[in-house]
Image 1 (tube, one colour):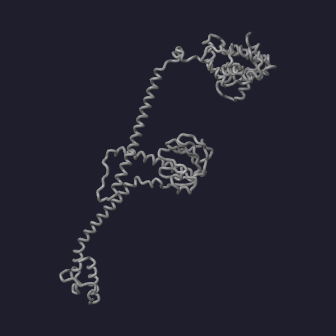
Image 2 (cartoon, rainbow, N blue to C red):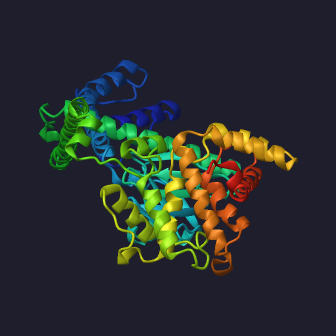
Image 3 (tube, rainbow, N blue to C red):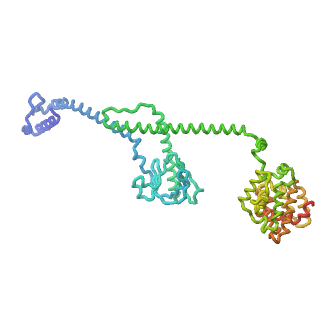
Length: 490
């Protein structure tokens, strides 16, 4: 007997028990006796009613159990599908976490500098990207409509106050070398974006490292095989997972090989540098072989004079002779600057060649010769007025009595080292001859002191007021120039 028939007979028996008698059902004949038939006398016997229902529901329970088992397997299949496909679902990467209008400026793209220009951009933050749109309406367009895209994996974020005068500015630098400035006038808004972007950078970087580690550890594991009861989902899974894993494995292996090669190259460079430093020849050996020549510019006066065996370097004597030969009447002598490129060329010739001719056509401009002479004095490691004599000369020039001042300055001049004394005597005698032609060259004592004050003397440390020091430098040079005959022994 089927379960619906049992329920109808049960309701019919209950109706007969309450109303006395009930006509037979017009829907069909009564079941034959002995086959679980119900009559008015057996209404009160509940055992007869329960027994047919129990015997008839045993196969039904079995069917229901099989149906539940099949349903549970389908549930497991759907769950396994979601677990397998969820990791590579591309929709997860486009999920918006935060979006707002921010001020953005591009500094460089893959290491190439760009002109910084601030613009208001609709900024969207996703788990692994930072997207910049020109306006909010472009967010619904295709990926080609995006204005800028920043990959957060491997990026660096930091606050900066040097690259912009605006406040609340932070910089995002990608792994490819692109740099972006992001700013908002509200500090709390900028801080929230900074923390959110930094959090996504850390998570995306850790996720990338985890994928590489899993790909390297599961490279040789057997692939997942599903049973036939899973239907058509297993082929897609088999087609997607191995290729994805293979691409990750290839990327991880190449990266590891690249880093290993970099380390070996660095070690090789370090070893070669160590060998070069230990085996390199000394300066004396290089000078003996002629690979390094002693320079004139930038050399200490005492060293240069000892090398040449004179008290006045050859370059100074040659320059003064050339100037007195064809430049004493030149307008603005020592005040007018010569061509800097030609001056540097003359310097190179003097340093590299022992013999040089200032009467050559390329040095015909006398301002080039005077410029080279001033450059020589400026590049001395210690000026013509030595460092230890700077403050004594300043104290002497402060003396109000003229004769006492002359005596104090003469005493200091007599104490100078022999090369300094000889060069100073020769130079100031030459400047006296320049002043003789002052009507033609338009150079005065004050003009020469302004030119040679900072050139011939300066303090060892840039202490004190520079302007005050310059005033004393000019006064000392002017005083020595005027009292030249009284200070030097003729």
